[in-house]
Picture 1 (cartoon, rainbow, N blue to C red):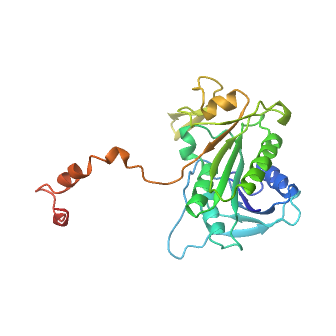
Picture 2 (tube, one colour):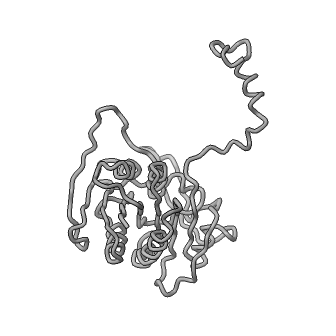
Amino acid sequence: MRVLVTNDDGYDADGLIAVASALRAAGHEVVVGAPSSERSGSGSSLGTIEDGAVIGTTEHRLPGLGDTPVFALDCPPALTAVAFCAGAFGPPPELVVSGINEGHNTGRSILFSSTVGAVLAARVAGVSGVAVSCGFAPHHRYDTAAAVTERVVGWMAETRATPMTLNVNVPDVDFTALRGIRVSALASRSMFTLRLSRTESGLLINRDERQSGFREGTDSAAVADGYVSVSALRGVGADNDSLDDAETELRQAMTRDDVVGLAQLR
């Protein structure tokens, strides 16, 4: 399977090298395209979209990846995924793998994750993806997460007729110590929280990790209990059920006498 490996920690990050190595060893055709520097927390941002803008790009070789093409781009991972899926760097990938991220991406805060943002961008381009995360240093286990990813990708290769965007979170234990795998809903709480406070010179960010207090059946709870969590993400799409009875009222609101230029809606 032709796989693009990307991330938000930089093209030479240990987590990226671990998962790219595992996928190469499993026989997949791997190309690496990732930010030239750390881009965490940028969600699905593309960066600049100015007409005529040029995104700096360099090609590298990384230890442990042999002759695998490695491209470093001066942009967020979402734009990297879009560029590769559009064929700017050769044949488009059949799958995008984003990670391995340092820090679990669980709960609704995945909205801000650029690890997840990359696979959501790929899905818009019609390509399936897997975002993979483990815990923060010093407890992170890239080896376990890479072994899990290799197996998930192998399964996806067999079921490639069904487009999927998966968010995978792996506990920081030996592979043999994993308790299993759970298909999970997104939790209301992620496995870490940010505390923001003003200082004399700016805004201070502190990160607090948490391992409990999660609702059963959610991704955060699964990881805390020692299970690999897999969540299927729908991607970008309208959900207008809550507006079923609102169209008439919206039209009336937009055609009040004090609103100019909307007569065509009457």
